[in-house]
Length: 199
Length: 239
Image (cartoon, rainbow over the protein chains, first blue to last red):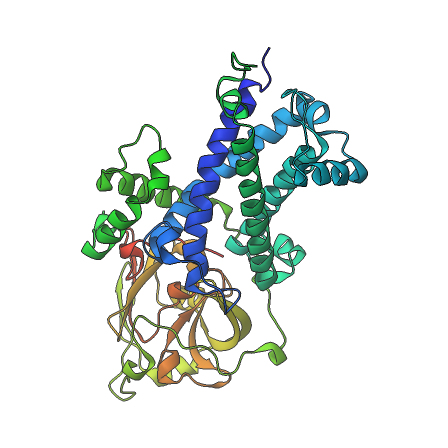
């Protein structure tokens, strides 16, 4: 049985690449003029070497994130993938599952069904990435797309939105990777699409 | 193309960045091959030039702000420190014209002050990310180019500056109504640190596309590049 459709697997790994490049190069760009004066990213963790290099990586990878994300969203809506896998998601169920997870009691036996905590996390990731793209466009094109920039609270507001959404994505990814480490059989499934022999 | 000029510094930086283990995830590319990765990034930057030229709407105006929002003092920024600002002598100053321009007589400062002037209170956005609102006044570049018989169908307008900076912009951006040859800042004659006697001011591009101390303006169909652009900053850099 295929748990993760091919489109989801391909877009997942392309998204990993795009987000990795965008976050690491974004940190270098941030350091050139920090939104929060008291906070800078360690230069060794950043990508691009200097501002122009980081911008080149950032403005190359943005196309991958945007186009790949578009394919994923169109597929997710049109195929019913989102409706089947991510909905419904009630706040009560999310709180319950998060509580169970924190006590180490959350079961994830059937990999074809996401629990409420997963649904909430994946939906939040989709929203955060979409907001990153929109705020990124608002920062990149504050004249040509000035209506969008105004919606983001102006140029300086868009920079804050961009930063906060980046932080949300990094946080969700860290939790996601920890969860994969705790339930390692989920990893090959995202590559082959199928359950391994042991399951 | 000129833009392929590699600076040793950039290559060193790239090498450094490639040592990042994270990049070994770039399946299919030999990430140890600096030149290949660099070529991909540069051609993506050129692709982004085309995408931005396509997105550019010659009629779309940058937002203007009330004078109360002007930032004082307006931040100084250049490729050198504020103590190294070039002081141009007013009496010797001549604006020279070159390339695809019919009337190439040099312009004296009083002649430039006598041309019709326009003002704008706009946001200058630096490639570094910070921004500041200021007020600039001067001559519309489009009007000036028309007056001197420039070939307005040419691709580029280039600038050479008294502080050895140089740059260029696309013709549609040069003809944008908010693109001006600024002679004043905050209603005062442009002080040296803001580019005396004349700087380019266009709110439709990033700050480094607004060269100061302009000494030569030329029109060309050959890509003139720019001081930062030749080192890796995106050439179009439109806002």
